[in-house]
Amino acid sequence: MRRIIHIDMDAFYAAVEVRDNPELAGKPLIIGALPSERGVVATCSYEARKFGLRSAMSIKEAYRRCPGGIYMHPNMEKYAKASAEIHKIWEKYTDLVEHISLDEGYLDITGTEHAFGGAAAIGHEIRQRTKAEVGLTCSVGVGYSMMSAKLASEEKKPDGFFEILTPEALNRLIIDRNVRTIYGVGIKTAEELNKAGITTVRDILGAAERVEAMLGKHGFQIVRLAQGIDERKVTPDAEIKSIGTEHTFQKDTTDFDFLRDYLLLSAERLSFDIAQKGLYAGTITIKVTYADMKSITRSKSGDATNRTKDIYATAVELLKKVERRPIRLIGITVSNFSDTPTRQMSLFDNAQNPKHEKLDGALMEIRKKFGREMIKSANVYRAEKRLEKSEEAE
Image (cartoon, rainbow, N blue to C red; front, side, top):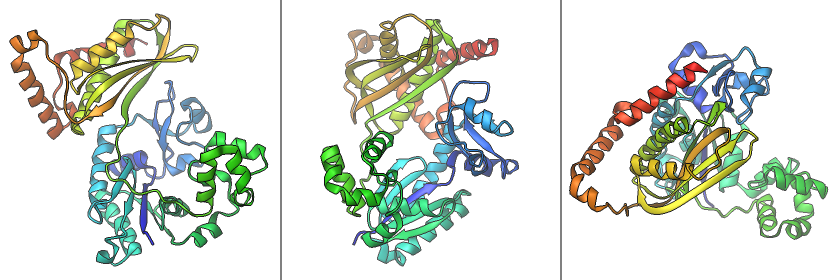
């Protein structure tokens, strides 16, 4: 039988902040927007969760429930560094590691557990090393499948360890739990099942044919998972479909110079992110949300690139096509990746700018080694300063 480990860091962003500033320990800490801003909670400490706070909650509601909390903007570069340290620990035990996010992943140790004293020994060792080497806690679940491992890691959070080693053990644990326990059952699917009187895992098993008739292939998969059958495989370096960033403004804006500055900073961040992964994007998409909450997207596909100026130029071209009315959010997503560039330089580029190509590459290598903030173009620096002045004036 397979042996899968699921690891989930405990309140990751908040935990990193507490590690770096112990005075925050034991206090309700909320990472995301500030109370005076628009936005949501990215994550929060367990002390804040006692007030009913959760990820994706609006920051206004979070502040209403927890006005005495400590609110902080996220520091993604710091979290990414901690994540890289954590991932190095995981990869000591198997090559079959699937990174779900900065703070979550699966390890298939079926072929390697004997070399480390068994699955339980590996799980406990990962917890101990994470605490000793990175200064953070994690919850570890061992299972015979991906779903059982994930449910196991949730069972004793935070800083816990649990095993679900057989379908029978899984069944005993979840039989009377809500249908949302099953992987793939989201809010809408749960509502549809509830309307049919199916509210628990036991109900799914007792009405398997009806679930399949209602939901088709999805229903068939839900029934199999409820039966403890999960044949999904841990997939190392799962293909990245897209990478994006977006920003909600504190005040709606119709200032397109202001919007272009945000697009430049977003393009610069995305350029760095995909260059680090050795990727080139063939499709650029911008997202705009208007003051009335209507959202639109505009996309353009072309030659694959990871250069800031290419991503930015395409984003600005797309921005020109959107309606000029008050905007509350703007973002860029890059997708359609390849591992080689296909951008065709113009004759002007070939004749006049061969040194610029080398300079771009050299600057990117410096930033990869020492961090994105290490060196910036003049255009990016000026955009940052203009945006700082705009925000100070609000």
